[in-house]
View 1 (cartoon, rainbow, N blue to C red):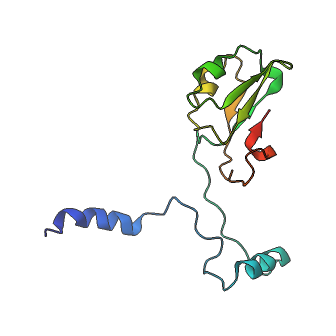
View 2 (view 1 turned 60 degrees about the vertical axis):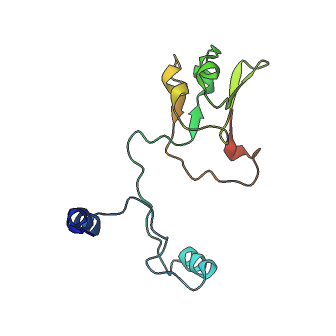
View 3 (view 1 turned 90 degrees about the horizontal axis):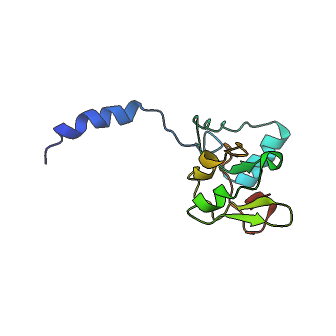
Length: 134
């Protein structure tokens, strides 16, 4: 087995800064609950999260006042995550179905749809306010 081709990549990986979030503490605490209590009391500090990169495609947001009801976003959405509400002439976005492709934001003629930097969207209830954008 020839290790020579892997050696430059190994050196690059040794000195590269990770792009992921580390655990909120420098060292793993005995109890996460006790650690969070200490953070709330000001006795411990959490590791700051990694800043999201520019043009990050997170949770979609919607400006209701800018929407003209053209339905182009419904036609372009590959996952059918956007629903048109006839009574208000506005849209509802089901974030749990969205694949964050950003095609709806590109096609919106008024710029009423845009991607935010929110990415912590896990929820047990698919009908929670966090997963529905109106």
